[in-house]
Image (cartoon, rainbow, N blue to C red; front, side):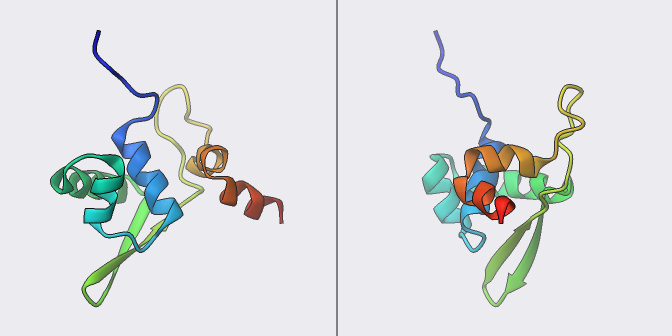
Length: 98
């Protein structure tokens, strides 16, 4: 039986960016345990679908996560990405309460 995870690599990268919006691709790859090339592709996907914005600061990128962006699947159309992230990243849930 092959192994699978509940969250996709896209979700893992988005979680990591949410926790550290200054993370380098190398750091994200190491944390998610995938290649830098895969992370670069995922970051590009997240940017093109509107989940994040990437801004250049010198030689580094800084990411902004758009919490209001809906998760675009037939089942989760009414769910915003921020709602999901607040369940998985405790600091977001605490900030939302304040």
